[in-house]
Amino acid sequence: MSQHLAERSIVENSEFVFTARDLEVITEIMRRETGVSLTGAKANLVYSRLAKRLRKLGLENFEQYCRLIQSPDGEGERMEMLAALTTNVTRFFREPHHFEHLKARMLPGMAQFARGGGRVRLWSAACSSGQEAYSMALTLLEVMPDAARFDVKILATDIDPNMLREGEAGIYEESLLDAVPAAMRKAHFARMPDGRWRVSDEARRLVSFKRLNLIGNWPMKAKFQAIFCRNVVIYFDGQTQEMVWSRFLPLLDEGGALYIGHSERVTGAAEPQFQNDGITIYRKQSAGGRA
Ligand SMILES: C[S@@+](CC[C@H](N)C(=O)[O-])C[C@H]1O[C@@H](n2cnc3c(N)ncnc32)[C@H](O)[C@@H]1O
Image (cartoon, rainbow, N blue to C red; front, side):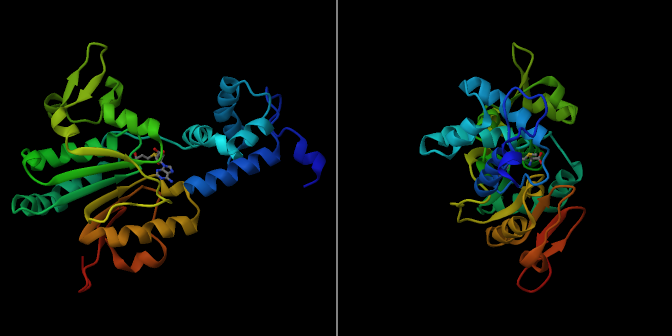
């Protein structure tokens, strides 16, 4: 691309000049730091999500913003940028068949194992504001109301610290609770003076929120019996998706379940080691072959 074209704002009538080069810098940082591929992303979308950051920082154009996020002092702003450009949409009991499968096919065995002194771990990888992890916790409490007495825990991780804070708070607007069955709502949510609803301590105690980048280091050594990794790898390129699926394998118990998003599919080297067990549900095959 000629220097001239590279310098033109690619967003019409914009408050800030936003060039193809700026989009390239931002796209590359997103790919490198989060795995999120903005290829084909509308320049308008990137512009509109970041324009408020420029306003807040008192910057005059995206060239200055790109200089900041590439500088050693720009780490905090890089995080803000990642948070602004990733999608955090989530819901309680999203893709309900996953929770039905967890309840009917996985949790009875896990409960028995825990009651016998076993260690049970579930993981909500890319948990956003916590609704997925709490849906897992509430399902678990249905099967095992005394879960707190045993070694049963849910790890909830995300790259975005703002989302983790929301998850930890466990406070949600009433409109977000529509998919929570009435009995569960009664048992596990308390209305706050401002009209929002707070998840019960019993459910919150089962969940630990931690920052984890799916394309970074994973400190966990112990295995999980179930991993929910839904609606995040869809934003990664194919190679990164395959790498994530492969990294789950050694962390999943034999027969353990992997739940993925409705438009996702396990691909690459990990695929033959998973067996389909329902729509977007996989089980890790045991050494003998079957899950
Ligand atoms: C669309 S939400 C999905 C939330 C939930 N799993 C669900 O299906 O409802 C995607 C989440 O992935 C997180 N995310 C994006 N890139 C990530 C990465 N490299 N590592 C960990 N989390 C990431 C975002 O911060 C966001 O909260």
